[in-house]
Length: 242
Image (cartoon, rainbow, N blue to C red; front, side, top):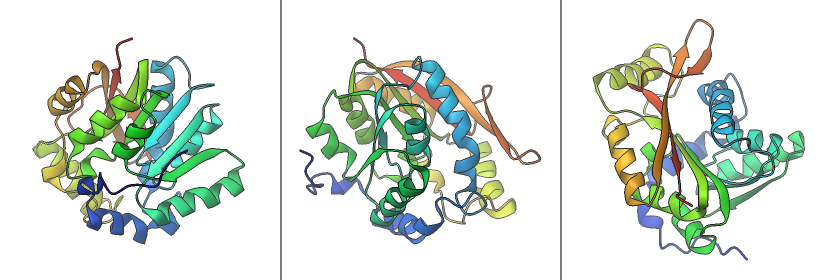
């Protein structure tokens, strides 16, 4: 039986970030709205994960920071048994309501990653944590929770944003102010994460880095692609040794 978030991990929550996503919750599933980039990058993230873990079908997956359920639902549609967690109550309600429209089955829980890890350690084949690490005060603790949740031999996937001048220009100035792909204030540069930092946190959590890929946006085609430079957005794959 899953217990409600105990508050033990609440120190790793930024109330302003929760409020920000709750305020936008009703627009999670609008492909032309504030979450358009997530809709457009979702097929690429899903394909990359599916290929690297040998197929999601039949696997038990935990999606950390699931928001309105865009990735969680697509993994369920790929045959995975998905648990999605978030602390933004309004976003979770939207995720649950969308299941009535899609017909998919996802277990949604309002619980901190650290608390879920204490209750379901080693129970998941795959753990995903996409575009979430840069929104919490202690991202290393989330990496530890993800490493705790995954089974020996299992896979953990993160996506986040590198911290360098190019990332500032493209992910904040370009995406939020010039192209207006995201609401202003979505990201804070100081919270961006270098790949070396993420790899170090993963290693400290008992995980082994298994791959990294850039995630690139073409504003003309409105399509994302993976591969190449990791200067801005990137995906990182870890495995927990068997």
